[in-house]
Length: 298
Image (cartoon, one colour):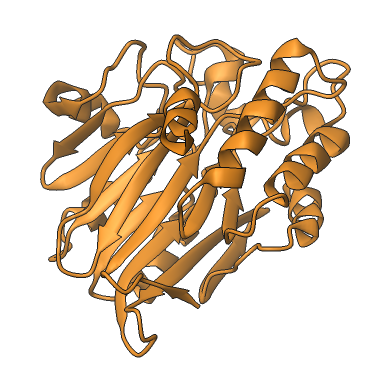
């Protein structure tokens, strides 16, 4: 059971885009070292990893790479949730089902009270209880946003490079969310940004947008469900390493995490996004670099 602290807060550490390759290069070794050190001192109630934990291209071994991620996470006692991005299972080298099977090696993996598996994707809803565990006060939704569209669709997306024809949430995932959600403040995590981030970049509150929004070209319809909610809704994604903004469009928070791995492009200092839920206050969030985490420790 996920519970708020006695002061009513629930603290989430959102990591994304580790991009661990195996055999490791120096950048991978730095990622593992920095992440391990961060997790050992991290003050959080839940870890959420939103995809592209590993590389699958070329000679990279996704099984060994993901096992390294698991071993790293297992060095801390904080509950953890994982979903996947476009690179975790590309090129057919490993299936999402196999990755989820490997998750059994995570000693602190928690699973949602509501789950849906469709076409290899797992989506989950987690309930956050107040400190005594008697009442649900918030809900978290974690979507697997997939990798790429089908070849048939890709042939008609002539303005996009082959490796940039990103997947969309399936209708089954959106219907499941509509049917299973509770009338509570909702925080959503996924890898690929919704297409509505294209509008949100015009309403940035904090952070920067330093590269194009690499969403799917196909609108899943989830956003139209979110704007109808009576309670606050915030969405957090990864995927675009040079974006780390928070924004709001039509009353829905549309935010990026912070790139967490070194073996990939990106201008920002590596780290994570802290998300703080509160029983009685609006959600707050801030970027925490690995360096800042070390300074807090010292």
